[in-house]
Length: 435
Image (tube, one colour):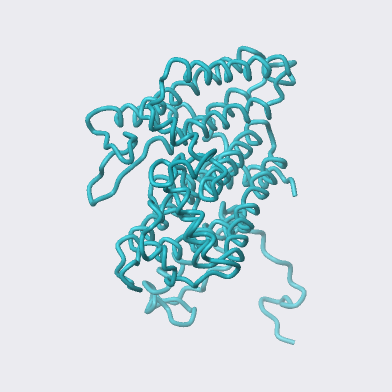
C-alpha cells in the first residue's frame, strides 16, 4: 500500500479547518492559466451571467415568499373572464359598419385592460399596512379630482359635469375613485378599536360619516346621481358591518331619510333628474323622452330570445337604437346578441366575483381587512344590480356602468384597483398562515 511520509493515506487524520474556508467550498478548482476547471471556462461568461440574472429574477417573482404565489388566482380568472366577455360585447356594440379589427373602441378597451392589469398588480404587491397609510391620501386625491371637475377643467357629458379631458382623446372620471376613498377611509376609522372596545363608538361613526360626506357633496354638485346612490350604500353597509349598536344605526337611517326628504322639498334636483329617477315606474308614459332608453333596452333584450342572434348580428344593436349601448346599456347588447343563456353566464360570473370577495372578507385577519373586502363586495353588487336593473326597467337610469364589462377607462381602472386591494387582503391572510 502506498505511503507518504511514513503514514497511510487511508488512516491519516484530516487537517484542522482553515478559518474562512467555508466560503470557498463548492467553487471550481482554479487552473494555473487563470481559467476554470469547469467545462466551458469563461468563454460563455456573459451568457451564463445573463442566464443567472434571469433565473434569479424568476426566483424573486415566482419563488417562495413571492407575492404572486399568494394571489387569489380564482378571483383573477373571474375578472379576466368578465373583461374578455365585456371586450366582445363592446366590439359588437361599436362595430356597426361591419366586423373590423380597427374599431377604435376595441383598441382603446384593450389599452384600458392592459393599464388596469398593471394597476391591479401594483396594488396587489403593496404591504397590507400600506392600505391604511394611503387611505387619507386617496381621500384627499379624490376630493381634489372632484374639485377639478367642478372647475373650468370639467367637461359636461350627458348632463353631468363629471369628466376631465386628457391628451390622446382619453378622459378621467374622478367620482369613480371616490368609491375607493370612501371604502378605505371608513374601513380605517371603523376598523381601529380602542382598548376594551368590541365595536366602534359614536365618535368613530361620526368621523367616518363626516369624512365620507366630503366626496359625497362634491359628487352631488356635479351631479352624478348614480355615484351618489352607490356612495350612500357603501357608507351604510360599512357602518352596519362594523358592528355598530342598533340605536346608532337607527339614528343614521333617520338622518338618511331626512336628507332625502330635504332634497325633495327644497327642489335640489332638476326636473329632468327627477324624471329620470321616476320614469322607470311608468315607462310607457314617455317612451320617446325620459323613458326612451329603458324602453328600447327592453325591446333589444327581448329580441334576443334564449340564445340570441349571434355576435355582430344584432339588428337593433347595429342600428344604434339603444343610447350608450357600449357603456351604460351593455347588458342590452348581451341580451340581443347572446340571449338569455349568455346573460345568465354573465350574471353567474358577477355572482362568483361577489362570493369570492365575501370569502376573502370572511377570512380576513382583522376588521380593517374585513371592511375593505366587504365594501368592495357591496360596491360591485349594488352597481351590478342597478345597471342590470335599469336595462330591464326595474331601476332608474343612473349612468352606472356594469363592472368589468362596460366600455370605459376610469371605471375599469377603479375596478382593477379594487381587485388589487382584495388580493392585498388575501395575501395578508396567507402570510399569517390561515389556510
